[in-house]
Length: 370
Image 1 (cartoon, one colour):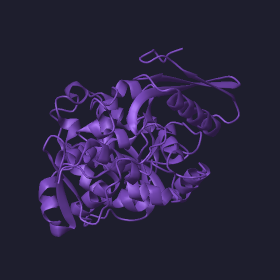
Image 2 (cartoon, rainbow, N blue to C red; image 1 turned 135 degrees about the horizontal axis):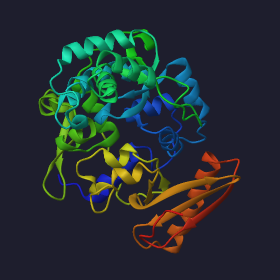
Image 3 (tube, rainbow, N blue to C red; image 1 turned 180 degrees about the horizontal axis):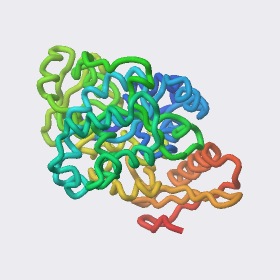
């Protein structure tokens, strides 16, 4: 059976809880989505606000404090907000590839080449121990132990080699303090779950992102062994083809969305996984290309109109005011502009509720910078 791009789009939005805001709790949404991108502090809050009705950001802060939620390096070597249970069972699948990165020639211009990875890891384990440490303290120990190497590269290597997470207060609502790192097991008081099957993670990926190709799954996760894991699922999955004849996997019991469903405007956080978690992004990005990561890195984020990325926005807080500027990537109808304007004001009320809001919709392709 061939699936149109429109079916893939509406199915993705439905599974991402972007067609209507959900009554699920924060841990339930984090579990369903297998975490939210949290490379910066604000994006997961915007992602949750976009998906949960009456979202209270303090529930995230409380979850970080009671350790039911954590910020940890996972998929694609980036920070995700996940449940503590997922942190323990996903990290073992991430670590084997993550640990190789520091010893490649491309890492910090070969700063770690020639060192014994096992010896570096042993030093890292001794340095981090069981107590949280700041990045500056880790770096100071790296300089002491490896005086002839770049201390920043050594400390980054340790953070890649060891399953670590960022502890609060960083990551709490409105808290962008410097990271404090802890090894995962002492922080959560539990061992890594090394028996959690990769196949089960792929099942969950399909529930949140499917139907999808094996290369989509690879792009999302950087896991190895995806094809063999899919083979173990047997009749739990079925296959489709897309408009270009590629094989897409989906769960046998999963529903496809009606392509004619209306899709409300959504303003996502930068790096949102809905935009970045497929190799073929045409189901949500019309030309198949996400905006450059360097754009997201300056807090520029996607605007979805009729279910597709149709513009970018950025918030500029200054003193007692907050301005949200939007640049469309195509001409919008009057109704679309009105809906974007309404959602933008709602987002400003959420993010900068104590400031005087203003929204400016620019001409297509205009520069967002003030």
